[in-house]
Image 1 (cartoon, helix red, strand yellow):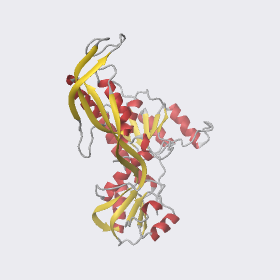
Image 2: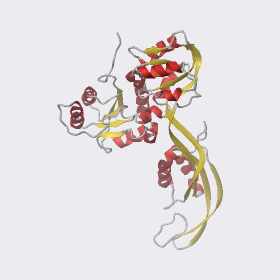
Image 3: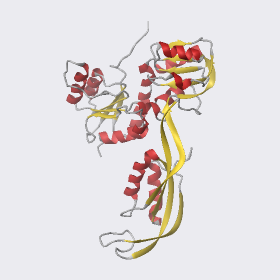
Image 4: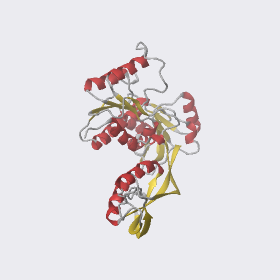
Length: 367
């Protein structure tokens, strides 16, 4: 079966769910149609004119970027204007363009976690800025004995049944169910119009609220009943997701050594460092791209913050907090996600070609 844009979006939104984005950040499909067939995908930081032309030259049907191409509606398609020229070229190339922006910063395993890994941060890490909460739910359904295991497996594959580091968690118990179908029904067990009593299994699984729609859809598709009964119970537990990460380094180091390590790891053409290069560093934070908020680190006692960019006044505040800073440049600190994302897509679609480009985007260099 041919892979469609919709199929690719399904995987991307499992990796970086749209509900994790900041505010009204314009993530999602920016051009094209969900039903278009996809054989080749190009990943890039931005959908610039050179990148769009490269995608066309490579024969790609889809371009996946981190930065949104269209933050606001275009007034026209005047190709003498930069944005008009890009939009027209996308249309001529019949290219589907999808963006995963702040949700890819926030998502587990995404840009901030990759930066934290490159810095050598321990696994015990927290967000710097809370963005979204994912409440836990309990789903209870009822099924005949010969179908309960199939249903359990499908629900767990869709995102249910995870407790900490354990997967496929569920509970079941047997009982007796009764029903009477109207004359228009086609009951899986028994006959319409007659009171039936059958042996059923009660199946319980936990799931995050973000997976609720997908899990309910999977339940309906895998259940033999015309109208499967299910209950959803909200729980007190929730998980908080956010921008940035903070934690301890596996091995303490010095600010200058950490700056050189991150420069090499991100292929940054040059970094800006605030603080004494001999300063000991053990507690650190990372923040991908722009938009760093100095208030996030107030009172945390961090030795250093690693980020994409920061202005003079931000450095002044960090200096007051006695916190060092390593600014890698906007593009270098975000491009690290592209190979990771390419691997995820390649594993999901064996018949799809996935390539990465770092050309045609804004790159500054230092003398």
